[in-house]
Image (cartoon, rainbow, N blue to C red; front, side, top):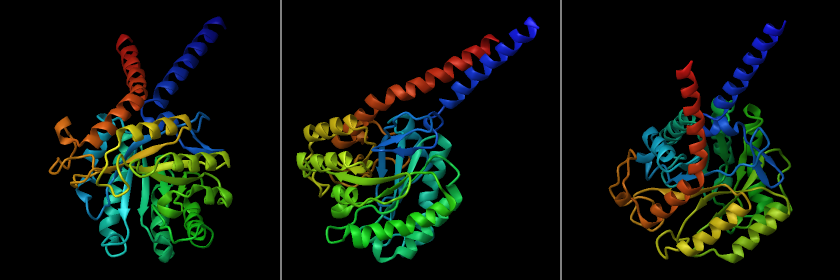
Length: 344
């Protein structure tokens, strides 16, 4: 009897050790299915989660970076825990070339799943409410294909314009898309854009969408958006909604002037204080301030410091500093498991 008890305990301890090791092998295995609790994103184990990563550029104009090598490099070198596939809709994007643009997004989704990080499927539009049926069809296809994996985060409307109405345009559009997604995916997080290029988040807080696991988009460019927008965000948080900074820059809202590392640092402090997840705009070699890469940088990752713009260097350093310890824990856990196996 004692021998059986001892053996049972040994097996139990091994199973616990194995499950803990497996659960922490990748970021997605560490956090699992994400959900929204109050104003926070939480893991399936209940702890608060803050993701940090990169957004790709409009797919129709920088599609060369929509590949698995870039996703792998951003995970391994930049320590990204999330990547955003910004599928352009108008201006030669999905509306005109649906198969071409969708395939770019699918490649990024598949790479993110393979590498164990989260991926935002971003419907990158300023006027999505004008063609709701198209968005519903797209997200239905994505949810049907990927709704059973925890990696997916849906962003159903990038940046509604200032002239739109939250109550009359944005919210009804989002509710229609959400209904289609939830046919196939009942759990993964859905992020909804807010009026005025995703800045007026208190309007959404005053009339939120009555569904589970909904977050709201906040975008900022620190050369333009300063304490006033942080105050707007704080008020929305206090009203009870959850925000996700799916896009931010390090310069003016134009994307092409006034590099602002000091103001960016204030935003970093604010987002870290409130556990807001964020993605930088963007992985692109376009000759402008917001781009992370200099013109001609490789389309397959492997970038040296001289391949990065000042913005890219700043953003990469922030992620390595803050996400690096998380990845180090995963590596340490995996290494420890390997050492135990060798000793056996």
